[in-house]
Length: 161
Image (tube, rainbow, N blue to C red; front, side):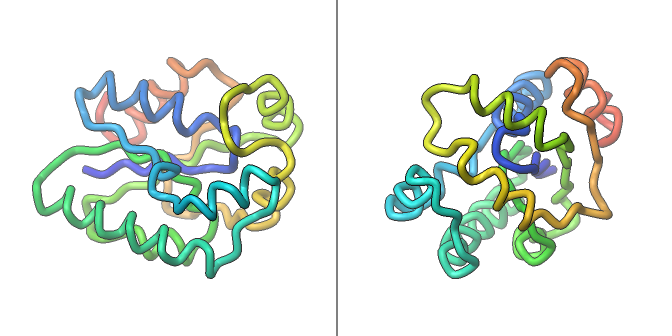
């Protein structure tokens, strides 16, 4: 299975994704690592990425997902996957399942103000919420809980409890 943990910047994708992968004994990957240097710089400056900026990134992710499926790897991928079109691009087979970390803009903004060492921040949060098309076919978990509680709900929703 490829579990894509999705949501806006600051929703906890990496923290929750790493913990989920650790508990399941699966590989963890962060979609941020697939961005080009110019895209990272753009986000660092607080400039949202366009759909054109995201196309090579999505293609790289699709290739990785296809390879993981072919190699029968179980992977947790932390990825914003904000738009339905992006999720369709990433859905390389029935092995792909989406997990949506849902939270309010105020809670996430507070988290971003406290976060250090990441190239994105509160500057792009509004654009992320503007781009967000909430998924219909996903395990949806409210982020108000602790990471451990969120992971427990995800495992239950994916049938991996």
